[in-house]
Image (cartoon, rainbow, N blue to C red):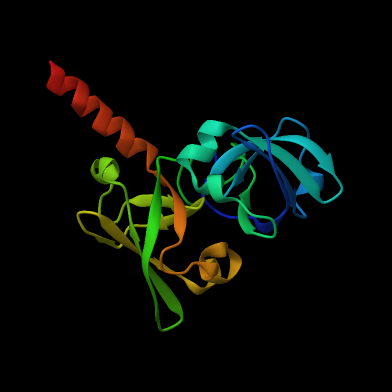
Length: 198
């Protein structure tokens, strides 16, 4: 489990195809703080460290993950948001993020306001029930607040620190992003569905 508070931006040093999936090598100063089998959120996707070598960590991306996330278009040299798992003996910032992507969104607009930036992101129709105004959303693993909400898109305002310390500043109109909706909201919707079935 994660919080959506990004610890570092890493670089995909290597991407190798493995029969529908990928094996990735990520360069990051977080690598020496990991051990084999540890989880690492990469652009909001929970991966498992299978090899650690200096400032490099290697992980496998399965075919299903490649299909349902932006990982199907991974490329060498790409910057990625990284977060180690939540420690339950520490403070919790952000919101609870599982690292299980619900869908892929598309950047529709990016615009500055003072020192902050706005992003408008379109989401897949099946996710509509999980969005509420002022609710939480993880975009490429970053915990953000839904500031505006339409039928098929939402707006987030990104403060200068988050803009500078994550990959959000690299996004352009048309780019794809991983979306994970708030876990509590998903449980509420599921409960309502079950009650409606009687």
